[in-house]
Image 1 (cartoon, rainbow, N blue to C red):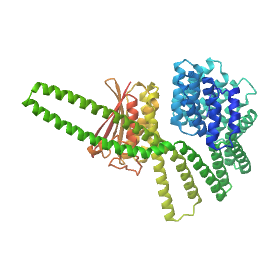
Image 2: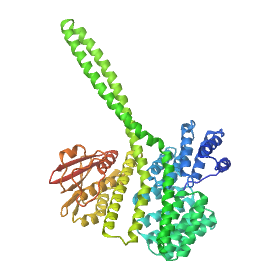
Image 3: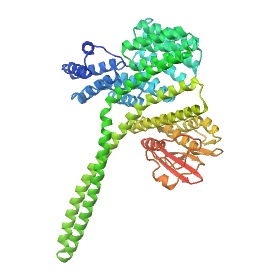
Image 4: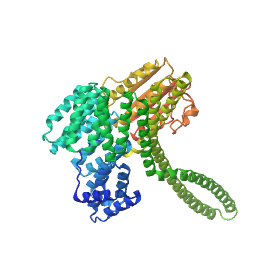
Length: 634
């Protein structure tokens, strides 16, 4: 990851690093206890917690799960709530960086947003720049290029104002990466050239290595592989000079990949093997897995499928090991799954018991009423009211407690689904890779080709389900972190619609837009609104037959911006409409092109729209079509 925040390896941290490496031969629990005891011997709260986060960052590349554990111990320290804000900022950035390395981007974003919020609250400019840069990294990775440019430019502006020239250069290189993502390669190269000229220290090998690495990637995407190899080679040399081992390993892998493309197999094999050896020494398991994958590609280029398969098996074995380690970290959540089911049963029994009690109370009140008529009406009415209020108060308290229990259980279940989804990503990718190897080997009979096709379809459907689970989990966690900005709504709607034009053409569907003549500005979160539109337009195309129309329109409605997506599909029955936004509820109508459906799309849409302060409604008639209307305040 491309960070701008500085790292300090103080004397205290150096002592603890020594303590850690002296205990690496011990069992994990003893090692962790010894490491924690070393920290607890530090009397100053800020130094202790700052050191814990500092060591966690240093371990994040080689021991990410130990690093996460160390961060959790720091946050559980009794002194953490009252520690200086800058220490909490460091903790958030550290956890965000580790999760980014593990490719758990939603959690990484959550921590970077926390760092930004704390930095803003104390007017800590460097913290704002660091967090903005890190947030830009994630936005760029997910194709949110406009938002990434805003974040990077904000970070660069602050760095220049503070005289942080090195940070400003690196952020300028990040901006070049955005233009690379937009496929404006000439602009990206021009910006990288500017970054090189801004480097003031000719011995700043680390920054030179970074910019040369970016230029290599840009030329690679431009398919100018010889220029790409030239700049990647410069990147390797500079990272070697700077003794930046982690970056050097990545650059070696990039160089090996380019050499393999250019048919330089021996050189590629040498670089990939060196990267593998360094990754083993460094203890970087995820990077080591990338080395195995690259060696598999090289073996394939050398027309040695058996060796390629051996490297892929090594990658799969290491992947399983990594995810076993990750699963151990989440073991308590998995155990909670069984407990949740038991608690659900207990709550059902309690609910039935309360119904019986309420029925009995009703009978008692009725008897008291009859007696009151005969004896003393006014006194009996008072007695009934007193008892009724006490009973209602007791029942309300019980219900409030059960509601809290249910909310906690729902939160636990969401967390468990999120962890499970992340655990499934890597194995599914491995299965997809192995199926591709089988397909490329060829020599399959008709029955085997059919079975292979089915296997690929099932794996793809499972991958889509995992993606939806991760997106839903991310949507449910982001409500507190939304940053609303002025958004050109007309342009956003037109851009999203244009992205689906190829899909519409493939199904012979006419995709129309009815937009106002002038631009419409809306104060909202653009990436979240984009995800809403993408889900709804995708659904409209998925369920529409060939030859029909899908229309997207934008109008104003009493202080709201009204976006409607109208299709001519089968419509949604009244029975389906009752459960329309429930998780995992699939409509009785089926996609017209054989597409998969997880039953999560509309649940995601409703969550996102409500977080934006808006609402969503449906007007549908069976056999005629459906119109979803999203209203966003603006």
